[in-house]
View: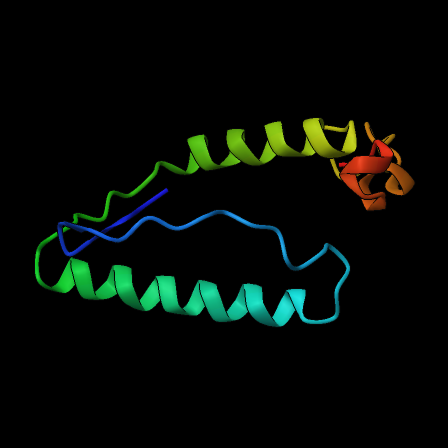
Length: 98
């Protein structure tokens, strides 16, 4: 796989899994990468390379509703029935987990 950086294709790199869900570093790395991505996108917007598009509130509400139904089996703020057991989510893929 490769990515485009300033319109130039990067060298090929192999996708690997090295950090498991539940690892204490996961939240830190997620926030770190999200911050870097946010700064990169803001920089691209400033120089006119990308355009920010506002999403109407109704569409955002619909997306949130779909996520709740998919992940939690519910539509409102009531307690829903999870569609996947947490034990399965935590298992490694080789042990039939997610």
